[in-house]
Image 1 (cartoon, helix red, strand yellow):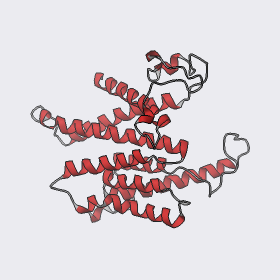
Image 2 (cartoon, one colour; image 1 turned 90 degrees about the horizontal axis):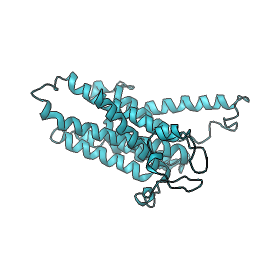
Image 3 (cartoon, rainbow, N blue to C red; image 1 turned 135 degrees about the vertical axis):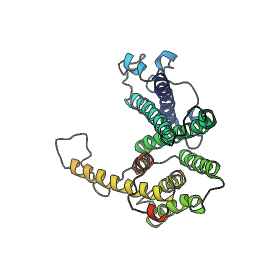
Image 4 (tube, rainbow, N blue to C red; image 1 turned 135 degrees about the horizontal axis):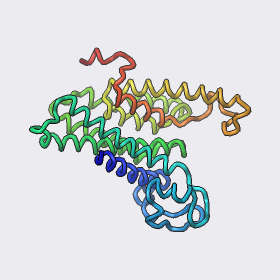
Length: 282
């Protein structure tokens, strides 16, 4: 119970940092852009430590700046809470995998604790990157190169380190294989159909999930994206919904990274073989 609370609190803190990254990330200066003390974007008042406590400061201040009274975006507590829950989910998920394989017992616990910890830390970092990419793409309709390449690089490195000696070339090539169709679509359409950032994201998906699961994630992403697009078109026809863009059509631009990441997340946790290809790779 205490471990779960600590992990959730850690996730809240990391989520607070992710908000900073999302709002300040500058592709020209990826590190420098996120440096400096937090301040109110309206009155520029620098925030004290007690105004930066994840979720709680937002609730205590009733979602307003203490200096000028400007409303604080709900993005802050939502991202912080989501990160906390995600950290907790990943920890329990990884722990259950080891436990189900009867690896976690008194004699072997210390021997595999480093491997378990490495897996958890790796996944915490990967899914933190997912959060940044998702919200950044929704806000700016672009996938930051720094995050896409960090995801791809970490996925490739972790795969090489953990599977060295049993590594199949097909898994090494999974990243380029999944990225190539996206790159071709981007080139043929001159960026009208799909962004090149999606190709970079698919590169990491291949190394993170492997070829079969990566293909399943991409197909699932297109399915979810299509359903969501149709849903938005139908909503745009309802005159009573003032918050929906009435000019939304099938040609309207929708950020695709959130769907790719949602598909990746679902396949990672549930391992759905949507194309039935796993039978050929057993």
